[in-house]
Amino acid sequence: MTTPLSPLTPPQLLQKLQDLGIQTETKTHAPVFTVEESKALRGDLPGAHTKNLFLRNKKGQMWLLVCLEDRKIDIKTLGTALGAGKLSFGSSDRLMEFLGVEPGSVSAFAAVNDRNIAVKVILDKQMMQQSPINCHPLINSMTTALSPENLVLFLESIDHSPELLDMDNLDESCRDAD
Image 1 (cartoon, rainbow, N blue to C red):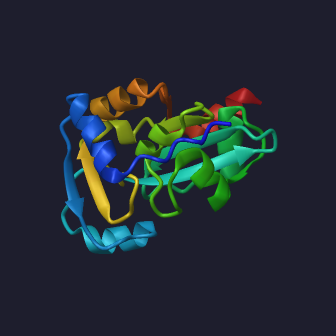
Image 2 (image 1 turned 135 degrees about the vertical axis):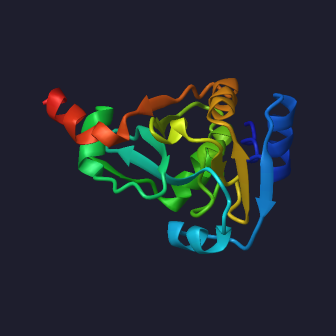
Image 3 (image 1 turned 90 degrees about the horizontal axis):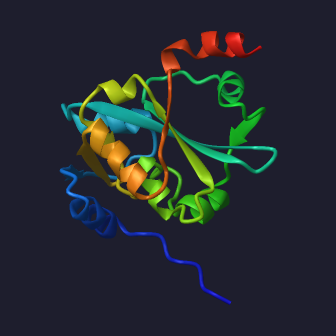
């Protein structure tokens, strides 16, 4: 019986980014657990700030949605847009099992711990038009900024080629699917 691999640590993730030639800038700060806490703490940190939703459906399929922090998300509409059916939030146990992070530390970087490629990464198309994009590097007491192109490069390097979702026109795309 093989022992499952341990999740990467923030320094290991940052080293992986460096090994890929990806330029980043990382700031350390007090832990934040919500978008509101992040807004209050970050000051004038430029770029797109993210909200990350770890979702699953009844079939056990999983998604990581990375979107602009102020997005209002209708889970039913999102489920239709993804062809997922009814979505719910993944449990903290499932989050740790598949992405190796705790609630509050979820970001696109957590896909690095999904070595079985069980979680599909969805990126907000409009978020990807801003630079830099700010993400927690596997812990909620740090924020790492990188370009949208480098975020995609990173995800592709770990076999998690992201799907871009037009979040501004989510309702319209769902009506078209009906």
